Image (cartoon, rainbow, N blue to C red; front, side, top):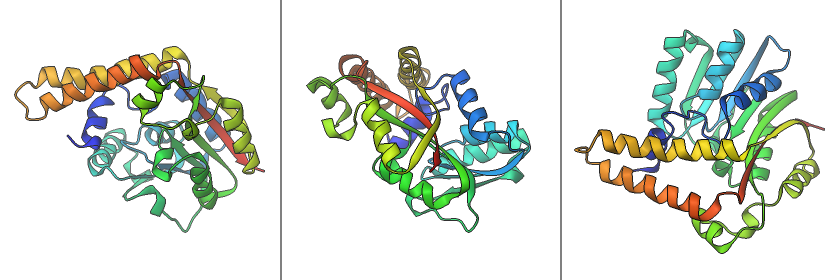
Length: 248
């Protein structure tokens, strides 16, 4: 199975592709949209458009743009937008987020759980800087080390110690790059566990429900492999922080 199909199946019951509970998403989005009744929001790595669709439902005066490399996810985003009656206010682009440009700047840029598309946090900040309007805001989610990673954690993640820093160092790097956190959220252990159980459970359940499908064995194997890496590797080691940032 290709990674995009695995991700779509795994996020069937957790459309936000990050360890964030529904209430956390609502609070972050409300804070990010602020008091503006009109504006433009961009999601770099939008998947099926969960963040954007929520924003459009909450603010009828806003318009949205989503960018992703997964064509099927974008098709589903468009179908959901049509069902919600907001399709005329959203534009969806099938392309690498690193290549996206627009003639009109955005009041809010999102990149939550997708900084890997830019090879890390600081390159993501640089890309967002070019797309934001003056006074605009960036909502970005990134991993950090809750504690020094063990060999098992690094092996499970396929990571090196320098791939992440602790929360204080990560925040210092954001500040040094000219951004000010005006709000933020550190995902709780419960949010992480709920996310991982949903991810692996949705994938495994799909395999159980479709035993004759050619992808069933691969889907079950992917769920079991991911669950093992989480429980025996990085659980309690990898954290996740979502910053709401403004430029100095």
